[in-house]
Length: 227
Image (cartoon, rainbow, N blue to C red):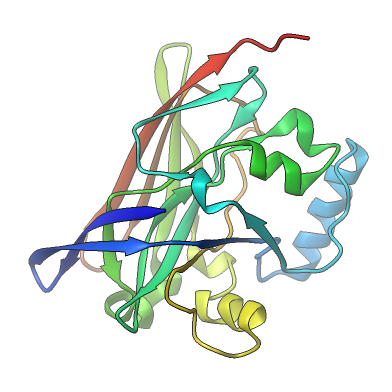
């Protein structure tokens, strides 16, 4: 899958195109193991299978990646999750945004299948990872949805709550750098008020030191669920 980014670095912008043929979602990526175990039990109570490992790496088909501002999903049961999205190009690591859009109805049957079923929106802007690595824990991810005609904050949290991208990469590659043509999403924070669907999803990665943000938004067309 060919993706195109506008890279913002040193007050300038440049264009970058990458071909991705391997996409990995790092699940259960929080740093607080007690909180992860609590969440596992919460989900198990509603039928979501327990993960076989923490963190757990889900492979999703690269053709599910999209930079379109519009996706389609079968039925009204899917919802987005903001995550950082890292990839290597020319030997350098970059960071952007993605939404791990997931079918929540299917999730109780198979987490892996529920992730594969939905398109994964990816932002169109990126930063050099080296430019934010020194204060990574201060960065904030957030998302917004529309409810009753009003935009509300759906997720918000500092990246200090999640494992470092390098740690997640090492866990997947056995200590090697993230290969070219491989991209990884690096975990998410909890939904404020609980997981729920919305046909409008806006996501942001905010750097409080520079005041700049990466942003991306998309809408969801709900397709009929027929038998």
